[in-house]
Structures are given as structure tokens and as C-alpha cells.
Image 1 (cartoon, helix red, strand yellow):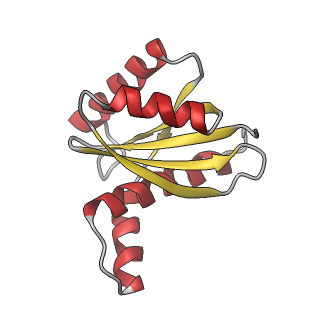
Image 2 (spheres, one colour):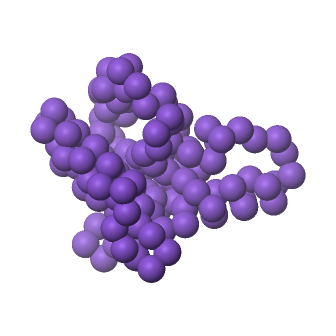
Length: 135
């Protein structure tokens, strides 16, 4: 099985998840998981199922690029993941990904839920990560 990369859009209630093949580098929404006690087990299952080699955590910032309370929450979340996972955990700026996701879903003209926004935002995070020159 080919290796994959997962991206996470971390929110207080839900975590959007996107996946990309590590070679093809084409990101797709995968799932939206609850940010609760079941998350580590669900993430471990996705990592095993998709042969994940890297997890990318979206890093939110304020409108002027400054650190916010949510930035610190996501940094701590990523640090905790790096302590329990045996694969690299990286951070990726997630500037306006949720706004962009909601705009795209609205433009499609079909009903959607907040979970759809979260998964699509994770896709944008992963696309930005894959577009970095070092990847």
C-alpha cells in the first residue's frame, strides 16, 4: 500500500481530516472526527488503514499573523500527537481555510454541514503543505 499524509483541522468540537497519497500529492477530504476521548483511537485507525507517514496539523493565526489562544491550543495538540505517534507531526499555517471552505460549499449550492467545512478546510491545509518547496 502506498504511503499517505493526513492533515487535521483542529476545532474545539470536531477535527476535519484530509488525506493525500504521498507520491501523487492530491488532497481529498476524508472524515470529520469528534474532538473527544475517542479521537486518538479513531486517528490511529485512520493512520493504519491509510499507511500514513506524516500528520499535518493546521496552525491558525490572527488576521495580522499573530499567535492567538487557538494557535497555542493547536501547537499543544500537535506536540501531544508527536509524543504518542511514531510518525512525524508537522504544523502548517491554515490562514482562512475554513472561510475558503465555507465559501466553496456555499457556491456549490447544495446543503452542507459544519463537518463538511472542517473536512474541506483540512484539504486546503494539506494542499498548502504539499505545495511547500521542501515537500
